[in-house]
Image (cartoon, rainbow, N blue to C red; front, side, top):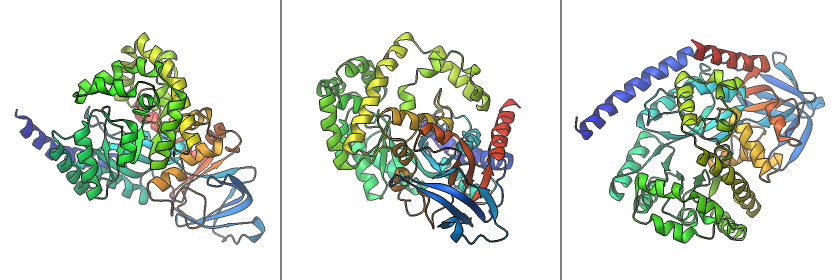
Length: 475
């Protein structure tokens, strides 16, 4: 079959399949409680922006919004309101994972809607979906509406993008226009895109008022991507090279390569790149990046990707039961191909990743928490807590780690007027904790309740979500 005909047939069939899957996802999901007036009494409110703790306070929620935050003696709680005892507890904004994958476009497996309960149960009320297509955008709309209607317990997909490659710079620009027409919130670029195509993407995206995010291309210096206007860099791509003493010769060896050949050459250079790490150079690079405003999404959980291999069989992990069967297969296939050389590189990569994040943070480079879930070993929802803990290990304070998963994403997405902090007028995506996360970031795991779009899920409800998720995968 000719490739163009096959592509046309897929474009017709995929929306039909995804529409069917959307109906199934909504029909099978555990519905949310009704919105109601909720009063969280005598709670300590965490101010992630200024690093203050305010309490005790009574926080009143109505119709999905925070309508009052007052001292308990000043609270005017309506009689029908549901009261939640906040004594000894701490209220933070809902967490956001800024790098997830809900679609499996390469493998053409069903979407990862199985992950929704895992996010919610871990206090993740928002995500940024990093690679969809035109048909995916239709399903994203369905999921958003189902959440609004209380039919789907899921994080809100705050933004969803489409990846652009292009067979030529002109084709790449056309793909940007097609993505914009399909409703993409941003354009994603990957490492293998040639520099000429990448520049065409930036120009076309600017014309359509779309941000470009993703991997710093393997043939382009990190500083060039930041100065040219790529809004975010994921996974510290090209940061290892930029923080080395041999960036120029490394890129020269990649000259003229494109696609898989380009990324293969980069991967073959990794040991040399890591060995040439230079702290002084890294500090200079970080200062320049800070001046451009480019945001880094380190996904440190991937830098430590050997954790799955070194811990033996993943089946021993209690979270394994939440994964869909095809994910079991994919993760175990990854393990079977994991070599001693891979493990050795990961061991060398890990401390350098920490240093790069630390240097960038000290220089004022914005950092956002993201996980690349569900990459092997990266459990949706749970992994965001791993990421925040690794960010603290890399020099952020617990409050700054919370900021990276709350207000920083809201500002990046242009949603800070409605999200990212616990303030009057903002949407009621909130997490109630049994211990202070600003004292110990591990306390962010001690979730007593989640308010998802103003709907209250207590600990028992969250556990029920997880149990139902496990049962669904066991069927």
